[in-house]
Length: 395
Image 1 (cartoon, helix red, strand yellow):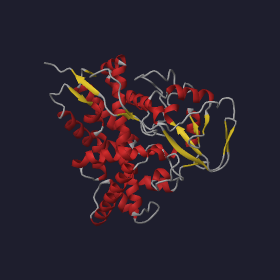
Image 2: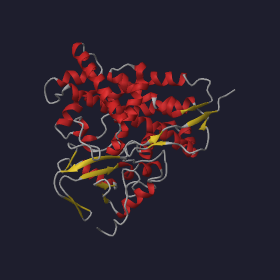
Image 3: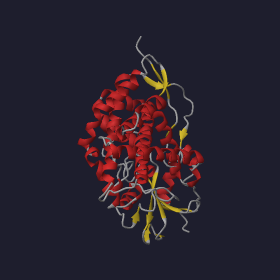
Image 4: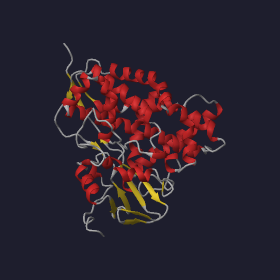
């Protein structure tokens, strides 16, 4: 073992992410850019350049054995390489382009209006519970063709099942019950869409799944639908909450954004970089690879530490500074390469609609108290459980 790896770090420990992981990220990038986590039996890369390189090299670093540490793949597109991954992703190609995403805007603004109407007359509320959770989950529930009135249950399913992404230690009976319950429901939806398809995403999966390169069994469609539910709800939630927190903790940046609302697209990219809601993803080496003087053996797991890469001072000037004017901003929060987040354009539009409303409708917003904020930090999707805020409304 080299002298730079005298420090034992459990990279899947909840405690690491419930605290401040930035000093650990700094140490890894500077002293152990290829780190061997013996506790979890995997390698980890923390530098931006290495994550970009590995993500663009699926021949040597595969997703097909699973995208989460020490777990088998679910069979969904995130746990496949091309051409299987790309064939299924293309089902939604029209909707996930920038132009296609704009087709969601009217529905997004309708949901935002409904949520803010529910806040009328309230001087204090929990931004996570009232805005950050319901907005994206209602969007994806409607997009899939599920019942919007049942969004709270789907939000709970997403939160519970996302927790398992940190590895076996985070899996529980509650998670298994939530996942199996959703799979059973999803397969009933599959049968209903086979009889009477609509224009929702469940229907798209069913129509395309019967034959051709995107062929899927009902069980596989159920796995894909849970992936879409989770990806469409939990991560955007964390950027809404964490981005608002960042603005409130950097009042000069909030004032600048209020004075220059045309900066909002740039500010959103900075919020995404700053929050980095998905901490990591896994790849598996298909052959021996030399990196930073060490050998990754065929079959070894490699953890891509997105949140660490998004604070890499080799790429970002003053990476520990929250800057709503930051350009360029080549963050990897959405991943990179063929597995770049399928819903990135929709997520950006969601964030624009939500933060436009926050800036316009909550002109005097502040933390309701200065107490510590609880985190949901299962070593995968990390974000606030609660963000109590106060609104000073005009008399």
